[in-house]
Image (cartoon, rainbow, N blue to C red; front, side):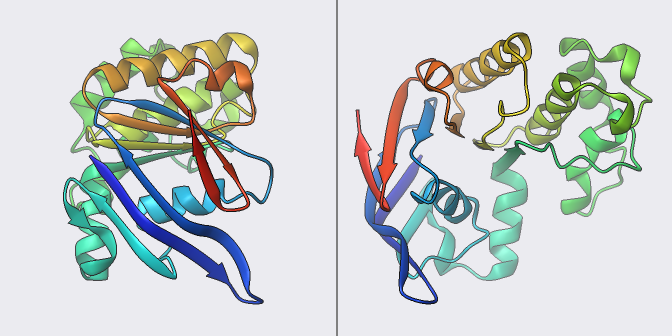
Length: 218
């Protein structure tokens, strides 16, 4: 599913964030990525998402090299195959729950309500039916993260990237989210989660540690 070969990222000032990283990740795996601050976790996630071009090396998703296609083609691939979840949710405050979840339709130049049916089904599954018309300011942190999860998977992307997604959640909502990741991976999709929490990482199929831009697999 994902093939990373000799990936390096060097920022101005000769700061090395990724140092000749190579890694293969199979479809249907739930992967936890751990490491101290500044170790390269977020940079790796950004290169996997197609948002940040590495200094050298390649990232392939299902055989397509992200940085050998045009920016327009990369945007299409990202819209169709990659979902992202963040610690701070990144929900749009002026959209309600249903509208936030259907937002990925915009990236595909489709009407905002294109995924309305699928969104309502996810809302029911995530027990958010009573919040469907609410805006993010009226939601709890756990509810916001469930909305963010639904938005990320509404188009059924093959790759789900999560950057510290449980950082603002209590234990109950953390458990809910981790179980959602497990279930999504069991459907044949790939989930990569950056986390500082050992308890969360230990729920994954594999933990990959990163330090000084180099990966250590276990």
